[in-house]
Image: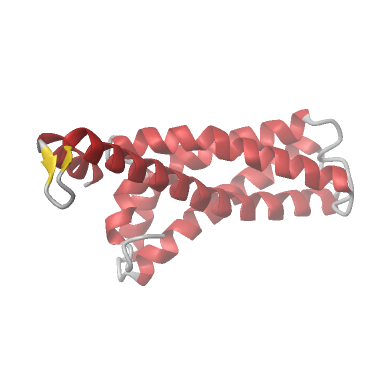
Length: 179
């Protein structure tokens, strides 16, 4: 849908609403794709972070080894990421299985990118998973890893959006048209 929108604007010599040349109108479309990619990435980050934080909390409190904690966090990251994306579609009256299938196709690459980057950094940062959750080292590590996950996933989401995939698949189905 987004691809059709972009192609539609690229075919016109001027933007009828503003009288601007097509190049200027296309810059606005490009800007909106960048904005949508940032929004989709933040949405994904919120969903992933919920699972990551719960998984790391459980793993740390239970005394699991770092690799076990990462496995729990990664699994919960996908569950919470898919849940955060599925709920708006259900609120827009989409049947559950249809919504879930759409979300699996739309969000898997973004969630996978974030989960890999986040957990890799948490494993690499010395002591990040061995600290008490009240220790500032843990929270500093978490801020670094989630920020890096956002930075890594943004170009992935931008690439997908420019091809009418990723968040572009779910966007038209939201009750209010936006997340």
